[in-house]
Length: 143
Image (cartoon, rainbow, N blue to C red; front, side, top):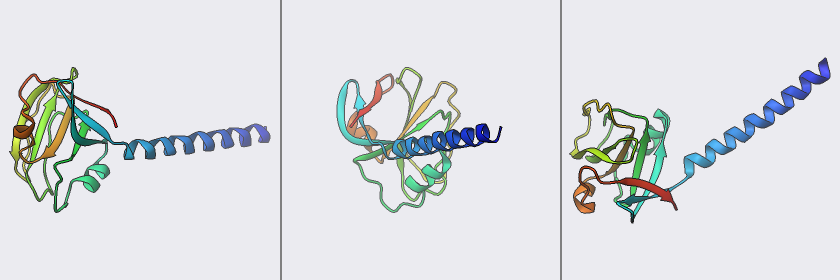
């Protein structure tokens, strides 16, 4: 019995380390923004946890126009701790734009959007620059 327990422990340890390695790779992946089947020069990173949000967005001095962030599974957004204005794009499960917020102020909260699944956070005035409107398709592609 002792040999079987040790074998299970080794297998569990190895599978856990593979999960951690895969998670680290996913955190550092960068994608490109695609608007209506046109690839744009904006790199997108996925944000899945509060820790990632804090490290990527909160208390940062500058926000580059070539970098954006994608939040998965959110119905609303808050900008607590931000030092700058951002543009927000809410998309449904079909990647269609259902709501946009241009120049969203720091320390504010958006409305609850029940159809929202994905939120893109871009630099200030990006919505106007990229000419994003309601019902546009916004996706990401591998870099």
